[in-house]
Length: 310
Image (cartoon, rainbow, N blue to C red; front, top):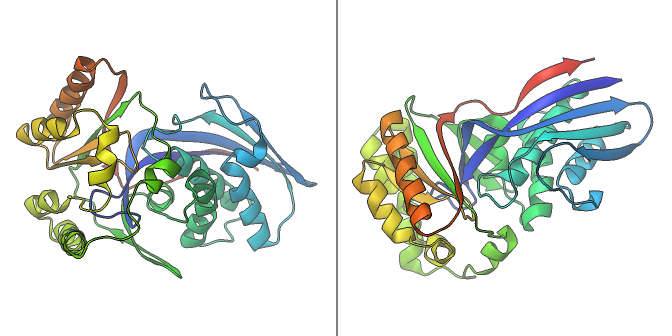
């Protein structure tokens, strides 16, 4: 019998302009799962977290991840997964990606790391496909690898890890609103106007240039979304008002985290991030909407083992 305990971090997808191709990992917040492999065949998933999970194993994002790993490695085993801690689904900080990444990383560790880091991401993407109906890695890649990532292409998968400025923090608010990822994707237009596409291309280039050069102002100016935000911000009460408050308080940028409803503010020091978190709390309190607020550092660390018994 072999057993591992894995932590996978929360993540923020898109980073404004990088729809489906950019994401970052967050410190401290995430999923913890345990995986046991034994002789035999089959898969069971036990939920010991305080977050409700689907009773049907076929609806759990961990299932296709485990099956994909066994398929591509040609392994056979009886797998038992225990969910110990869980990000609440629909929170907009990579709930499905954290579970998927933890499962993919943990399976790889259990079986002696036969897969490369990029192949682990490919396995994790199977869980994301079940959750959202799309084959994307903007949450899964940073959850596995840590840091800020760019997915240059999907056919084949081509991931570039970008530099992370040492003092970057995010204030993230999860309002108690439900935004289903599949529904949030359905409202997006099938075609993007040329002026919006040009704006988005320029911002993606500017963001990457800013990260490599350490140009904080350029990073902030570039984190603007001309494609998804105009349609998705209607799910978040007072979105434009909140952005104005956060930018006035010194935040570099404010965007929707993934498909929402979470919103994040990128800050270049912890003091501004704490101030941004307080503004977020007040904003949703005044609207009578429950919320959780996290103030965390942008992390260079992805999945990691927190226990092993082989």
